Amino acid sequence: MRLRFSDPAPIAGKKSIMDCSLVDGIEDITVGLCSVCGYLWCLECDASLLTSPACGHWLVCEICDEEKEHDGFCGIMPWDCKRISEWLARKSPYRVMRLYPLSLVQRGRF
Image 1 (cartoon, rainbow, N blue to C red):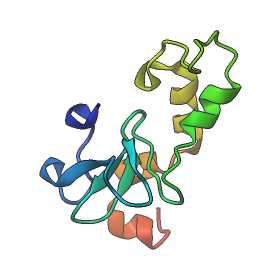
Image 2 (image 1 turned 90 degrees about the vertical axis):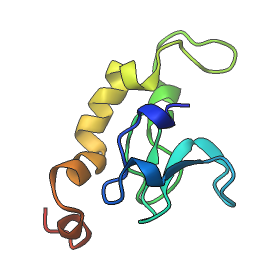
Image 3 (image 1 turned 45 degrees about the vertical axis):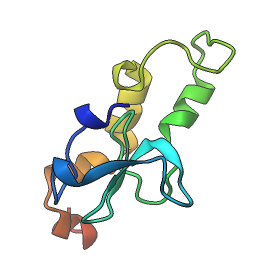
């Protein structure tokens, strides 16, 4: 997976991250977890997963009109997809997490 290429967790850095393939209740290799601070994010598009381990980029893919294979994959990797990039720019709190200190984001002061 993309774990070795993804950004480090906001507080603890790269050494504390893992995918959630073996985490009870998540069991998803596309979700990253910081074992120090508990931060969850999508390893495919780097979106912060603050409310659910299900990333919103999957919905973007679902409603996209690109021709898809039988498994639903269009052949464009999420980190290369223009539609997902636009969705991230508009909707993802992840952008806020990278621009402001975590303490301000947690208090809603960003």
